[in-house]
Image 1 (cartoon, rainbow, N blue to C red):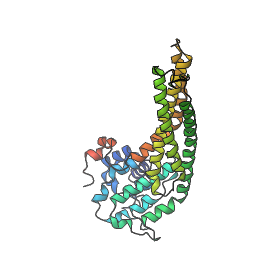
Image 2 (image 1 turned 45 degrees about the vertical axis):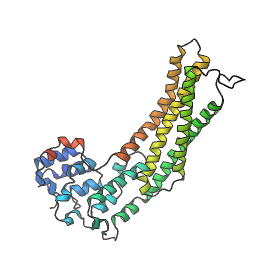
Image 3 (image 1 turned 180 degrees about the vertical axis):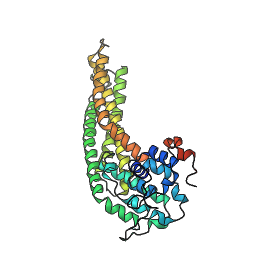
Image 4 (image 1 turned 60 degrees about the horizontal axis):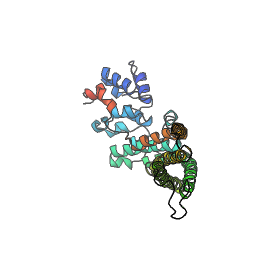
Length: 326
């Protein structure tokens, strides 16, 4: 069925492109036949939601694939099936929603892999009029993004590795230089029985080990090969673990230095503990403000599935009254 001018089509297609699932749900409930509409280029709601990475609209309607008897309905005029469409580069306004070329590539990989699991196995080997399979389309469309993603990922890992190296250097120096000195006869630290010395020792050791781990993780990213599949889990997971251990190392280092500052310089002046705590929170606040949004984006992008049951679908009319597709 071609495009119509029933008053819903323009709003319907724009809502699909913008992933406004509430609007799509309302239109489908009031005008069920709208599900059969195609835009001026001949694409239906499923095809449009895939090309525009409209995740919420797709989750609202993707079960149509299982109920569509004719596979030809899901093929465009260039013989592109759903796999080919998922292999295309996402529109620029969609890419701009994600920070960093590596995460943009990862998101497109998630879409492509999700569609691979839904289409028939034979469709993964089907060729369009340009003699390209879905995998070939993905590789061609994402060549530039792959290069940009590699540059972005390695620059991020390089900047974090510098921070980790500085922390490791500082805490290592503190570990081999016992604060307050040692007993010249026994070699036992003079502050051995002080609680703050114990806090210093434990925190400094934790900072050293986690900082070294973070440094190794970032260096592994810098030396890793960067194929398309690596951007799906391997490289993002390495960056996630690196950032987590870097956060832990930073916090442990500040706790260690705060404890020894209080022990050495603040004897009988406990009021200085508050000042030390406030001062220690400043660098923690800085690194969290700078790197925490990236960490959250990485975790969500890596471990949040695109296709599946979502909480926002529970309130949709289409989900509750699933009769318009039968």
